[in-house]
Length: 507
Image (cartoon, rainbow, N blue to C red; front, side):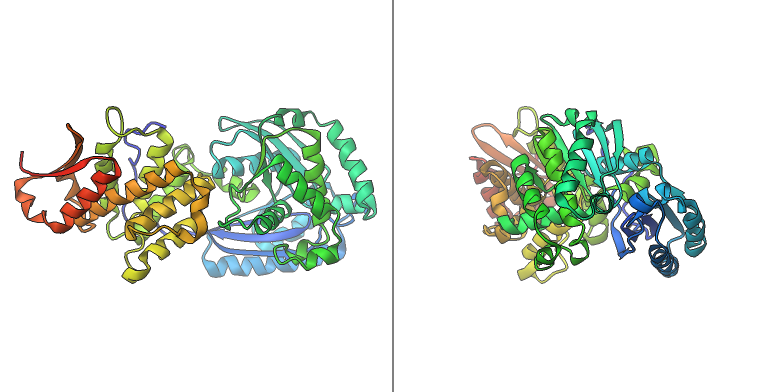
């Protein structure tokens, strides 16, 4: 990433509320998601799903059922009213496998447009795969592997490399379709899946790379694995499983009955019928290739659709830093101060200073933008509030260790002695822990000097000196800022890097 002028174009006023809605008419469900705006990292402000089962029976009868159509139209009329109530001026609607394959699909689409009050695009298989892959890229910009979006009627696979979409394919392997074609038999479904995958060349591209799993069925598998392993961070996006872990949990669920699944708290009851078949698709996919890992993407077709509508400059902006800047604009006492904090910390890192990779610099800037978001809470709860806000935020463009690093950095900034961090500590190695404590110490010194207000830090220098010193230099006009608190925090920061703090007034 080119760090020169990285925050050029950042606006300091709070983000404007311009809701935009996406309606996704799938083979199993019809869903409305309203986002807070057409932005690089949109946050959902309303999300509702109605299970209509439109695709049930399409594989055997070739038609959408009248019951499914009636339920879908009722849902769309409700979604129209909700979008109007929320104030979404733009509603983007798409329909997928069931509508495009059924003989009465176009007739249904016309009725659906009247119910929803806007146009509906019936996606081709290639378009559906493209939007799903764009969603993965939007949420995981460094993705390198094959994205797989499992819907009720189909599985879309597409190769991703260097932010670009390459080869893709649509396969008739959605859980609803498999249930129809197999007559509800898992063994028969296995034969259908294996026969299809044996002819699917794109699976060879997964060798040694990551499989990015998109879709509610696979998210539920990840939730179940989290519960089994007592994973401390309940965030599905970027949750990673090894190939063996994914095969194990998928193989287990594929052989459970719907009744058994309904008894598992982590599994959505509405998916208990289809989950064994969706799990079987993943288990057989992994058996046919050798990916290095399975990573969950909560971004899919809907987010990919919005991502495709962004201008190039916004599409190429950093997803994490954009989200953190939105947080700063909403919650910090002064967003301008947080940008100054980014520049001020630059004095300690880089060539001939403290070592730092590009990835570490990116996380440092993100931590600077988030460093003051807990200030409104009671002082005794600022650390915990910041920890929960950051660890649970709808951030994308960051893996779980990175997310925990940000959360703990700000946690330590408010609670210098804190070590627990809700058990999240175990997701970081020792070096990351030390760096989180180091940044927190820098922040504590900075805020004792600036009181979180802009215009102060640019006048103060902090640099590594000779003879293992860390020099804080205040201009004479700011000499009154010196005091016990500043000296104590300078000494603590210097100790973090094995140096002695030195406070200098004037030149």
